[in-house]
Image 1 (cartoon, rainbow over the protein chains, first blue to last red):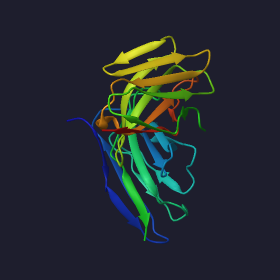
Image 2: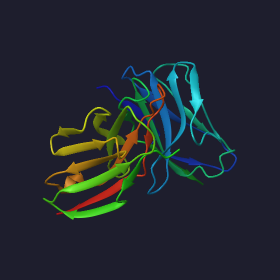
Image 3: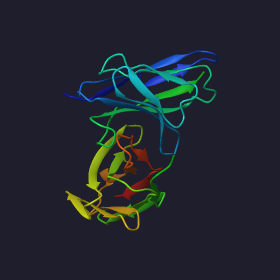
Length: 112
Length: 112
């Protein structure tokens, strides 16, 4: 089955720690995205990548970093510089920027 | 950068009734999309309507688009308890391969 997989489902971060969220897709999509969703809110774009080895900042990139070394994978690192990381993180992919996006089931990040 | 704004923020109806949600946006678009999100899950694409289309149907869903008013509506007919979810509109920009911008969503509760 084709799809997009995020792991882990729940993640806890200690003060001063970097954590990495995994996102893998087998849909052969060129574009991948990371969003942050706070309770009762919409999606805010953190980073996106339209092709391997290239990515762009979204609206709230500060305190986050990404890499796109393989077409299938787009991991997100939440660094210690992100002072309010508690949120629901969603990864998505699509063939092109304005085409329908397929989403993973999210990672919920909390602070210990 | 918020493009789409859904209205109302929350909607509660009885099973069997119709549910209408609206989306307004600010700039010209190539297409507008509607997504559904069940609690704690990723978004699921429902329907895409292009800027040269006025109405589109998919099962119990009916979407309209009025580009002169920069607005769209999503109608769910004969609603079911399983339709309980948040619904988001997403718009693209006319300037090439830019990512979608999501609104804050409408929370729909269908009471059995």
